[in-house]
Image (cartoon, rainbow, N blue to C red; front, top):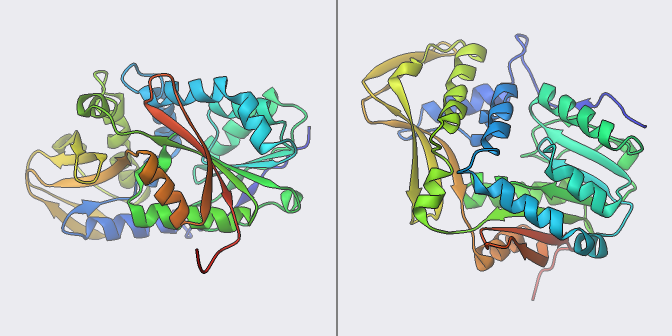
Amino acid sequence: MTKQKGLKLVERDDEGVDTAFRADVIEGLSQSQMAIPARWLYDDAGSQLFEDITQLPEYYPTRAETEILSNRGAEFAAMIGEGRAVVEFGSGSSVKTPLLLSAIAPAAYVPLDISGDFLRAAAAELSGKFPGLPVYPVEADFMRKVALPGEVTDLPKLGFFPGSTIGNMVARTAVDLLRNMRETLGVGAQLLIGMDLIKDKDVLVSAYDDKAGVTAQFNYNLVRRINRELDGDIALDALMHEARWNDEYARVEMHLRAQRDITFEVSGQQFSMRAGETIHTENSHKFNRRTSNMLLLAAGWEPQARWLDSQERFSVMLAQANPPRSAP
């Protein structure tokens, strides 16, 4: 097995705090509608809680996407071919990633994630399952262009972005991310991406507000992280998890709603919330064929194929980074 400890591209201050995390939190809490980018939900504890969420009966996306990856391996292999470096944006699932790697016989695997400990643990677990596969974990914020390890520079690339994580972003940010993925992977690369589909509102909301309260704890963990890493004193017992469907934007939103008036500090700055005000912590946009295609095309990715699960709840799309065109 060929393996390296991995690259670390996250910028931290003298106290070990991720500087981008601090900047995003302070900026987000300073807005009239408080909002924090969803990627900061995924520290080590948050990543583990999300893995727990994927096992819940209400959370259909993982089962639906796993069904596609399990049943369409031969089609993936025919369209993707062997010998690519698989670059996964986000630490690999113990279920989904091996299904893909088993189907296409890659030359290397490069997982990218901002949660370093979770990244390395996931990479080690996958290395055990594929002892002959070179694995090069990179701790980085994949919202930006990432410099890949030199060992994979000359290999053809396949980006892998499962779970409909692209739905966490508003359209502008999603297009920026897809463009950065294109810059990271290069012209000629392919991208296999999961996108959740529009469906009944009650099914959607329950997937983000489960009866066991695991998703609520996932949301609350963001506050715990802020309090721990940014010297915050946000009263967690004053906040309530809320999931709602926003039909205008075709998305499920997660919020933390203040149950009473509160004031708090984060990194020495003071903030306040009135009862009923919220911190918007996550979007999960849902797509159809047209909006999926439009998103990819806007970022320079040409859709090549689309697969659905048997209940048509979820889609997996394959796209290619073609050279830019200035005219039709």
